[in-house]
Length: 500
Image 1 (tube, rainbow, N blue to C red):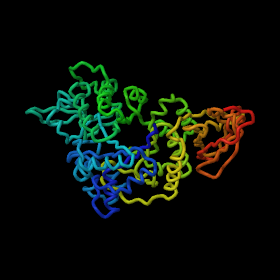
Image 2: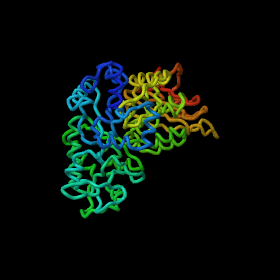
Image 3: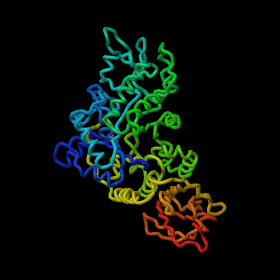
Image 4: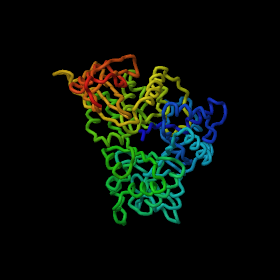
C-alpha cells in the first residue's frame, strides 16, 4: 500500500478564495473539477477539510472578545470585519456542515468528487471537548467535567432548574479554552456518547484527524482533572481501544491520524492509530538541528517511522516559508516527502505563503505566491510518482564517515526505496549549511553482480558505479550545503561470471 500524501485545507478560507476566483458562490456542493484534478496530479491521496463543522454564536463571540486574537486578525487580515470571524473550528457547536459551506449534501458531493479522482476525505474529530454552543451543554450536562461549586476554570450553566459549574476544555500545560466545555472521560456515558458521535462522523468520510488525541488517555486525563473528582470507578479500558474497534467493524480501512505530543505517540499507535504527528522531527528541522534530525529518525523503530505524519507546517504552526531560506526549505521538503509514513502538506505551503492564519477567520488576505517555492514543490511532487518513494520498501540508511575525523555524515538523511527489483531510488538530503560527505551502505539484492547508473532526477548529475565497490565500500556521497537529491539507480551490465 502506498504511503498517504495528505493535504490540509482551511475549508472556510478556501471556499471564500474560490468564490473570489470564480466570481460566484462556491461551496462544497459545486467545487470546480479542475481543483481536484490539480490535487490528484500532484499525487495527493487524502484531503483533510479542516474546520468543516459548525461553530456557534458563543464560539464566535469568544473569538471577538480577546485582544490577543484581535491583534492576530490585524496582522493576518488588515482591515478585517467582524463578519470575517466565524469562531474556532475546534469549539464545535454541532457536528453538521453549515449551509454556507454546502451542508451535508455538499459534503457528500465533495466526497464523491474525491473518490472519482482516487482520493479520500479526512475530517476533524475533537475528542477532548465541545463548543459552548453544543446542545449537550444544556441537555446532557452530566457528560462534562464539573465542580460542586464555583472554581477556577469553570462557568455556570443552568440545567433542570439548577446551576452546574462546568469546566472549560483544557490542555494541562496551558490556560483553559474558554470557548469549549470539557468532556468527562471517566464516565461511561460520555465515552458511549462520543463513540456514537465518532461513528456518525465515520459515515461521512474515510478518516479522521483526532485533535489532541492524547488528552483522553486514562493516565493523562486522571492527572489533568484530579482536582475535579468523580464517584465513578476509574475506567479500565482506554477510550481509543473501544472507539477505534467500533469504527473498524463498519469501516475496516478507515484512517486514524492523531495529533499527539509528549512522547505518547507509541501508546496511541498501540491503541489503533495508523499515524501520529512527528512533532519532534518538525522541531529539529525548523531549529536547523541537522544531527538531531538524523539521531531522532535513526532512533525510531522501522514501524514507528512508518507510522509518523511528517510535516513542515500546519494550521497550528508558523508558515515554513517565513522560517526557512529557499535552500533550507527545499532540503527539508524532500526530507519529509522522502520518508516512509504519512507525508503531510498544508494549504498555502505549495505557494510559499508566509502569513499564518488564525483558525477563527473565515477569510484570508490575498498573498502573492513565491515562484521559486511553487517551482520547488512542482518539481518534487511531479517527480516522486515516477519513483518507488512512498510506494515501495523503505530503508533508512545509516551513513558512515567518509574519512577519519570528518563528522559531516551526521548531517545527512538517506532513504533507500525499492519497489520492483532490480531498480531502486535513493533520497539524499544534506541538512547542514556546509558540504557533507559519507559512505552509505545499500541493501539491494545482487548489488555486486552489476554495474549501476545513478541519475539525479532533481538535477543533471549522472554517474556509473561498480556494484562490487558499492557492496564492499558503500556509496560515496558529497553533497553541497542543503543539497537535496533523488537518485534513480538503473542496472547496467552484469559482472562477468555473476549469477542472478
